Amino acid sequence: MTIDEKTYKDYDVVYRYKKSILLDRFFAFVPFVPIIIVGGPLIANGNEIVKNIVTIIWLTVSTLFFLSDKIFKGASLGKRIYKIKLVNKSSNKPTPIRFIALRRFLEIFADILTRRMSFLEKDKYIENATKTKIVNSTNENDD
Image (cartoon, rainbow, N blue to C red):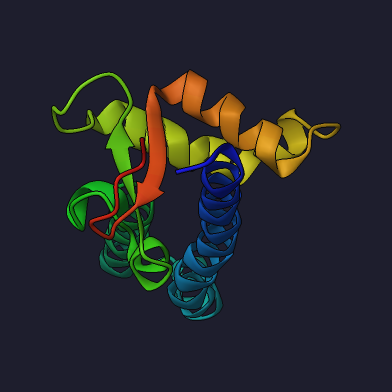
């Protein structure tokens, strides 16, 4: 493989990763909207049981969003659609949950924390901070 082909494949993976972040945000947004619209007035009425149920649903959806890469074995729904996955950068061991949650947090807030960086620089920043990387989920060699 020449350097140009490898560079192209790296940029292609990063481009698909950026699109997968947007898709994952959409998938998280869809269940949060009804929770806010329906749950807000229900919580305002003061019924403790309803407050607890809405809180449990909110926590469940939030947990699914932050840990979707772990739940779906390295690829959230957006990553599966774009055929990429999350892997541990340093070894073949499974990625620790704290790095997956940190990566999701940084994906959400990287725009605020790193305003002057390009997306490629943000991706490298997130990879270094979480010790994870995004690779093709197909059986190609990424050497």
